[in-house]
Image 1 (cartoon, rainbow, N blue to C red):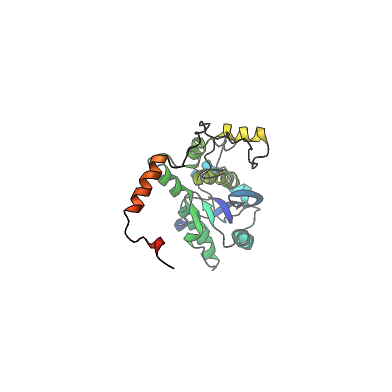
Image 2 (cartoon, rainbow, N blue to C red; image 1 turned 90 degrees about the horizontal axis):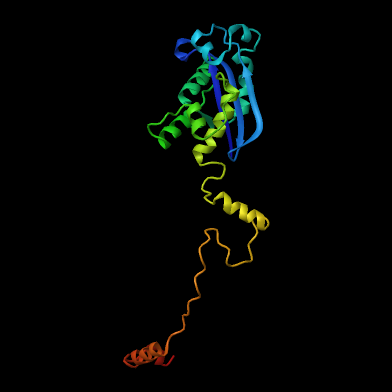
Length: 238
């Protein structure tokens, strides 16, 4: 299963006002684990960047002056994403900008169903709590100390870690305690079967063996019950 953790930085807050994408960061996940493949692009937006946006991401027009325009990187971007799900925090924002760029080039837009919105996931999982990326990093104890400013690749990396936690962690559904795992590790290979029948992960005592043989009284009562049956089928001729 291939997924793409993705983030963008822009010149402003709305593509309807002519704002453009200036940075794309994307990381490849397979089976919810990073593969090491990534895409990081800076893009010349061919317009000025709002001061408020510069305060968020620190990217200036001078820095982007010699970078390629979106038309020059669109094929590289689409090839990296493919048809696989894109994990995005506040997907409507990034997808709105991506599709505005594609429309500008008369390219088919990407469907919203191709995106997985971690903002919606977080709000559903933790109703009423802060759901921005920094708050989720604090909640899941993910180190984001290197995130002084917003950056597409840094945010995509943090988002991938947050996404894994929103799904339930690296091993969703696994409830064995760490001390039980360490016990298994001390006694041999993690998947080996312990030969000691008294070993239990919950350390509960072994129950004594139950005796299921009938007593003399039970046998007598059963024989009396059989005598009272009229024409039992086991006495009929085959």
